[in-house]
Length: 332
Image 1 (spheres, rainbow, N blue to C red):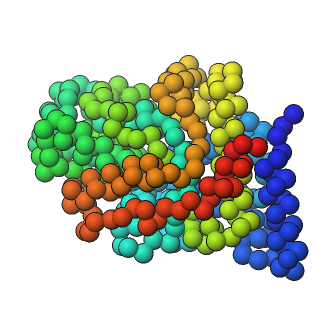
Image 2: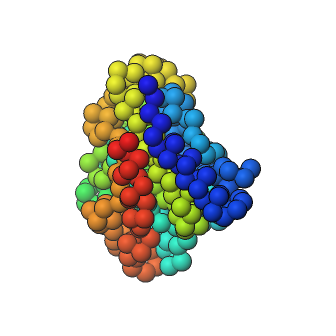
């Protein structure tokens, strides 16, 4: 039997708020429905997961929007075009760099750091990070790729100035890599998968550099609404259960969905999914001091790089306001 506890709780809260207010308010539409505008990167993995696990029957509306990176999601969130964004630790740092963030990080999703790499094209003589000295390297600015490229260079005894860094969107970077206008590319997800399908070589991996913390960020307006907080907590708990549903012996079936989205053979999609879950199981967690400190380390690194104009205290845009409803939803 499908669990409906969190959904009924959200529905009940919506009715209570509407009764108290005497009518629609805030993001409520049609008199009784909250709508969450939620971002996704690369492809709508979260939406597909909920549908696969039969958990998409939410008592609120979810409007998914697709972006090439978490940085674009944060831009949309700041502009009021999204209510909720999902990203690595890096995009919120740059979105808050002007000192006037209108959002808060409200939850952490632990996940795999595989397929986050620096790659060189087939036939390249670049076989290690040290050989990038004097080379032109594409990277996705203000994302994990920006961060791990910097860290991998440091570990190889190189600095940012030892390469010609070329900020590029993933699709343009792949074209540039294949066309020979860049010597290597720091990317993630589908872009790295696509590069390997064209026989690109890994010259540096971020699997042991990145924390595995992926952040869920909500606008201050969304966080200020009790009904929207409950809806968001329910949505995140559903995602947590959806991953557990796939892991419970359904990886091979879900791999077909993955393969269609990533243009991989089903066997490869299955291997990638299993490898990722083995490295670090995907789980939703509440905000903690340790997670905040992890992002502070990232912000400090970008300060050392000179990418931030002034020091940034990340705790200013973290909030534990979702912790109680999320903890309740996760335990239902």
